[in-house]
Length: 307
Ligand SMILES: C[S@@+](CC[C@H](N)C(=O)[O-])C[C@H]1O[C@@H](n2cnc3c(N)ncnc32)[C@H](O)[C@@H]1O
Image (cartoon, rainbow, N blue to C red; front, side, top):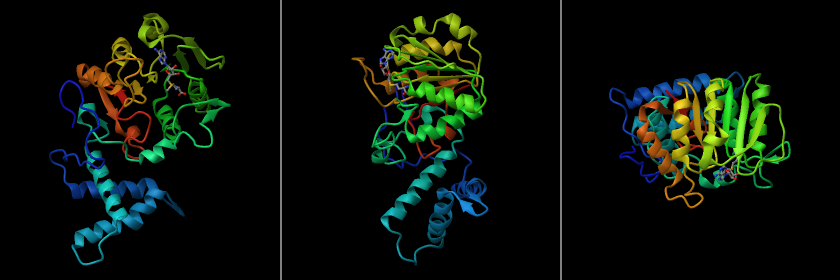
């Protein structure tokens, strides 16, 4: 659990077990998890990989543990798997929308850092329409789900880079039949055009010039506000905060990076400072942050629903 006015960062073990909320029993949580796996991961003739793992490996392990000592001891890999599922089951007992400061801080993610390092491509970096886009394969799975659920009317992106991310998001929105316009800026504007995207030149230190109050006041909601420049984060979020409506989503990519551009405070600490002042206004939506395992996305602890 994070404490104080600034979160201390990710310092504890990967499979830290948060205490169960009062009134919750672990065995009941296990049963709830197993029922949901049966519902969402087991289909006629085909199971997901998770479905198979839970049915054929985890369940026998849990049953063996409940029966007490007797059988052969499980190997290290299986012990790790049981640890991982136990941590997952305890975390989900916190509910879907979680206070940022109640998220158990961990070292790294629920997927190995080596896997994460490969997740933007090895033979080449991921591209869309030939343009590099700096997302991971996890994010390519997550964003379409978030877009389909939220059906945003406006998407803001800070940090366009080559523009592949904005083009890809615009094409996803169009494929989903969502009437949404994207505004994106960077220090240097890429030479691209797309009917669903306004490419702008701007600087996160002067965000009010590129996203002026007139634009923010009239942009239709719900919004997906995507911060991906990692600069002046506290200042930028403090400026945008009054314009966000309940139900809007705020995503901060790479919060563990930095400090960027000579700024003193790490991005994560700037985020913590902002959230501490607006604690009740934002909740981490763990459905998305933990969809592929704990924090398996660019936006560690940082996919927020505006409450
Ligand atoms: C991680 S990249 C963005 C990736 C992009 N959103 C995507 O999905 O492909 C970060 C970008 O932030 C931009 N950036 C750095 N400092 C900035 C500033 N002060 N204002 C605006 N953009 C900045 C960099 O030029 C860089 O292109």
